[in-house]
Image (cartoon, rainbow, N blue to C red; front, top):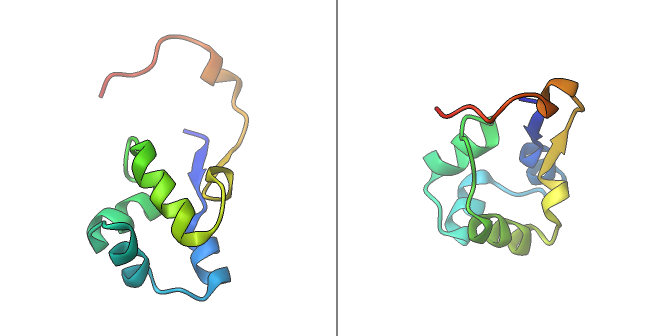
Length: 79
């Protein structure tokens, strides 16, 4: 999937530690790590909002998208 999580770059730019961010937004370090690595299928809007509030950013600062024409074809996969 061409959606990429860019949270790591923001954490570094802000000079934060991932464990401190996880505690501030109410996630376990494991949950935050899975999101940072892109190994999750989705994220709750509330969690995204908490990350944005803690990092003083917008959702687009945490995610990026590389266009792929195949994204327009066929139904979503049900994993």
